[in-house]
Image (cartoon, rainbow, N blue to C red):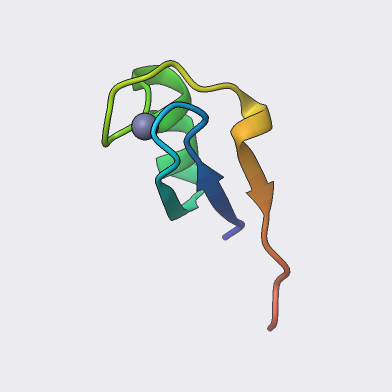
Length: 49
Ligand SMILES: [Zn+2]
């Protein structure tokens, strides 16, 4: 499963998320501050396996 590094543009919180968490965050906003986030807030992480 793909992993992403989420960085909130509002509060600056960095969270490593998987695909389903990414979808949930896009739908519901930052889990820390609740700000709306766009796909630009996610950076795909390199797969090591
Ligand atoms: Zn936030």
